[in-house]
Length: 139
Length: 294
Image (cartoon, rainbow over all chains, first blue to last red; front, side, top):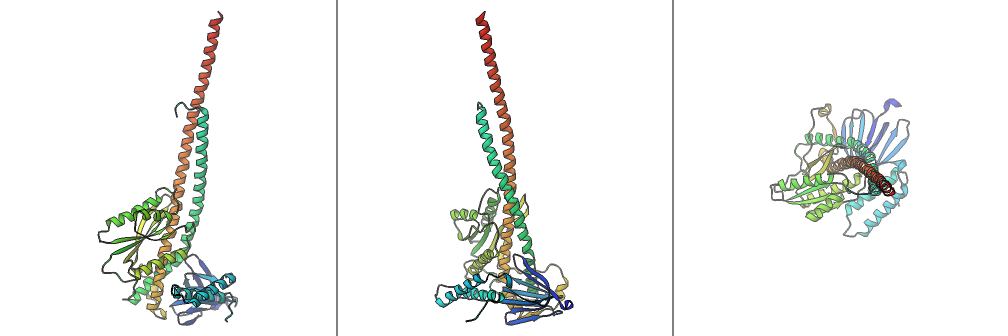
């Protein structure tokens, strides 16, 4: 299977979070999910807050929560730039749940003083993190 | 310290030695922190460079795009300076040099403008609180620079810019050359002047697919570009601060050593003088006894 792989790099301002060969990549593009396989044409895509999934060289599916950014694909290398990115298995589920509750509470208050867009983004980020950690159940 | 006793010298030497130990420890701590700061500056490079390259490429493709952050104001009345200094002193002229650079920039600006200072670090806040013009402050951010802080500052200035509270924004920081040299630097970050591509790389001729389209991508990248520039300034500033402190404390340690040497010399002189005086006393006494006995 190894011949079907391409390089995935996830870069944040603070570090290179990930650099490995993957078989298949799905990113949260602004208008829906976008899949990338080997030999994809050069592309630049804007990304939303959400979950990035990839199938690693051994066929395992892995998830990463990202807070928006963009992706560049060129010469069998996909480079994802995000302000924050967290590997699914490293996410603090409890903290993410707290953040989700907090964001929901803020949105329900409908107070004019709160920054609505900001609260909504916080909610999206919390959901993305829980989804990446496989700990999100919709109610 | 003429006429001081041996005991006075001993006390002073002990006190200088204590100070020397502190400065030595501070120097070593600063050296370790400098290394860490340099590492995080290094780690931020892939992000900053990819972002810059991509914006340059998109700007070239997109041609004329309109975005509030790119628009130059016809009339500039309010200028913002994001000034990055340390929270603490004991780092030589590091803080003063940066504040001086801001003051010079303000004085040399011949336009009739009002200046606003966004302080990052306690030292610059204290200064502009007295002088006036302080509009926002970010202090006690700690020794590790967080991107989240840079983003928050970025959001603040972008909002102020869009609301017309600021017409131009500069970031002022000390660029790290080495532990002995930090150069105060002023860079304009708003309105954004899109970076231009350096030379023609292979990528210049590649046709990309843009999802969803060039404008939307560029618009989502511009605010991030501001964040990364502020982050870069804060990282450079942090490295400079530790470099400056390391050098200042190294000098202080050396100076303390010199003071200890000269005090030791003085102390020995004083001790010798005391011994000589005692001998003279004894000899004098003995002579007197001899004379008296005859």
